[in-house]
Amino acid sequence: MSRLLVVHHTVSPSLHEMVESVRAGTAADGIEGIEVVTAAALVATPTQALDADGYVLVAPANLGSMAGALKHFFDTIYYPCLDETRGRPFGCAIHGNNDVDGALADLDKIVTGLGWTKAADHVRVIDTPDQEARDACWNLGATVAALLMD
Image (cartoon, rainbow, N blue to C red; front, side, top):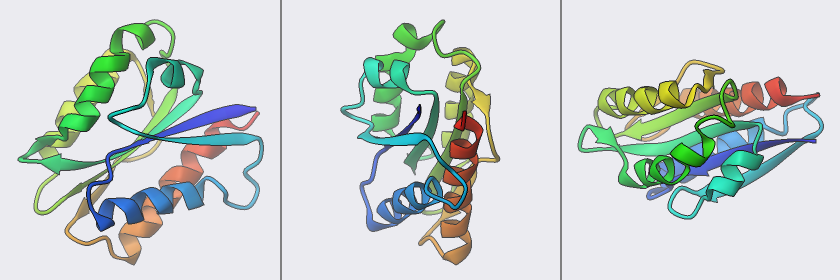
């Protein structure tokens, strides 16, 4: 069974909605054999990252940059995962009140260093998630989960 790790920093109802939409997408019709593990970015461990076959990251953009909690996750897992997780698929959904570009640029640098493979376009959510944003998060979860099916 493949494992998908959903790492999140849900500091608002908007981010909670986005995580729930991602999780719902991982259970789409036809997706089987995927264990979904959800972990808060501040407590996710290198072991969880090493045990996962793919990743979905959901976090806010803070002051134009990646949220500190997501940066903490990467600081914690980077070297233990550097050689072991290359090529694994990932997706991300970032929420901001008016801009997410800096956060996505920060994230792209780190996942490039890790050698992770972008499974889908980044989901960019500005302000309160509408139905289109929730659908994009659902599709992100479904896409990454489908890639992990044996």
